[in-house]
Each structure stands twice: as structure tokens, then as C-alpha cells.
Image 1 (cartoon, rainbow, N blue to C red):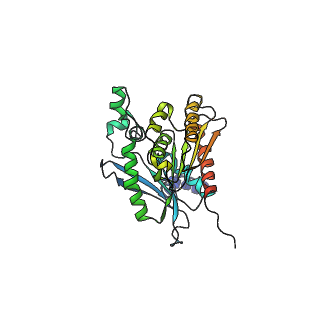
Image 2 (cartoon, helix red, strand yellow):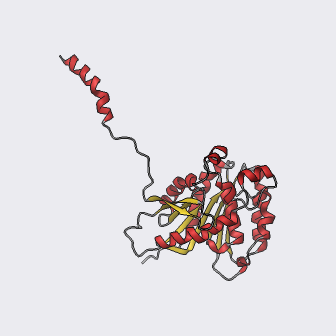
Image 3 (cartoon, rainbow, N blue to C red):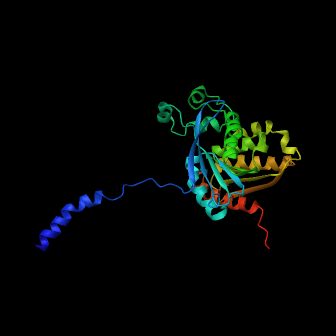
Amino acid sequence: MRINLIIALFTLLPFFTLQAKEPAPVQIPGTEVIPIQDSKTKRQYDLYVKLPESYQSNNDKHYPVIYFTDAYWHIELLSAATFFLMEEVILVGVSWQTDISEQQKLDVGVYASRFRDFSIKPSTDPEKQAKYQYGQASTHLTFIRDDVFSYVEKHYRTKPDERTYFGFSMGGLFGSYALLTQPDMFKNYILGSPSIWRSAPDLFSWQSNALNSDKPEINVYISYGEQEEKLIQYVEGFVETLKKNKYKRLSRIEKVVIESAGHSDSFPSMAVKSIKWLSSLQPQPKVH
């Protein structure tokens, strides 16, 4: 009798298992994805917005914002880093263009637009230019300035004078372009392994006079992996020129070499170290 009962229970076990809760995707608490359109090009993007835990309970408080590109790749690590090192900040990630063609997704990937949006000049190779549409950083920067900032500052309690830009690789190149051409957009620039290569002369030829104005100071964090042998000379040259030009508004230039790391594997350390650096720049609460 007992054996028959056990056999019956094992027979019914799959049916009990099926009643268990279906798997669900993991979501980052306090994070939402918001569609946004570039008002000039009509391209569609998403914003990944993460609010600090205190946001809902502290209705009078305004927060600094970290804006970052390559949102899908970076949101998880930046969410964790800010939770432990800089809780009182809003994260806003800008996605790749979401309404690209299926053929582009097959030929390049869902991230196809980053080659166009983060690069500063067209390719001299007609075939590559046709495929990637390089050289539209100026257009993308205008989208962030006119549409992204407007949306975020209308819908959230932010401090517009305490914006930070965070970008890695081509995102670092894009940030370097923003720093030199429209420095007023951000107070702090975090540039991880920026893909400057031979673009430095172009970047400095487009530099804005605002870098030598009497407006608020700007802080720059720039890093690369110790093993990025081909990139090192270009990043070092970029930093050297920034210092040599003695821009009135550049208050801090923090250069960090990530030990025992190449390009991709320098990113996790760079993200954590740069958020810790950014946290150190924040005003400290008064002790009574």
C-alpha cells in the first residue's frame, strides 16, 4: 500500500511542478525604460532611468545625474557601483537607436547606431561609410542636449549644474568630443579607454572658446588599461594636450591606468574607480 502511494505521488509530481510560478526576468529596482524620440532626426531611443532609494520619500531634494551611453551594457554595473559608492544620484542611460532595420541588426548588430552616433567624422572608405554612417556625433550630442536633458529635467528633480557624462571606448570618444566642443553640457566627464586614436588633432581643432570662459569648473577622469598598448600613446597625448593648453575651466584631470587589463577587461575596474572619484567631488554633509 505504502509503495503504491509513493509511486502515485511521483507520478503526480510533474503536475505539482507545473503549478510553480513561471520564471520572470530580473529587474533592477527603481529603474524604468522610457521611449524618447530625437526631435530632429525622428530616430527612436530608450532612456534607462534609475532613481535613488530616497527619491520617493524626499520630495524636496534635487539630485545630480550621471548620463551614460551604451545603456544596455552599462546599467547593471553602474547601478551596483552607485548603490555602494554614491547613492544619492540619478542614473540616465541613453540606448542605441531602437528602430533600426532588421537588416542592420543582422549585418552589424542591435548596437549598429553607436558607430554612427559616437564617431566624429566620416570614414574615408566608401564601403565602411555606407555600412556604418560614421561621423554623426554632433547630431547625437544635439539630441542629448535638446531632448534628453529637457525630458529628464522636466520629469525628475535634478541639479542641471551637476551633470556627469560617463562613456567607455567609442562612448569615451563621444565624451571627449562633448568636452571639447560643448563643455557646458556636463560638469564632470568620465572617459574610459576613449577610442581617440588619430582623432586628437580634429578634436582640438574644434575646441570651444567656452573652455576658457569664467563659467563653472569642469572635472575630467580618463583611464585606459595597462595592456592597451596601441591606444596608450593616443590617450596619453590627449591628456598631455589638455594640460598643456591650460584651459581655465579644467579644474581636475584625473588619469588612471588600470593594472593588468586590456581594453574590455579594464571596464569593470574603471567604472568602480570613476564612481568613487566622482563621489569624492560631491559636497560633504555638514556635521552639527
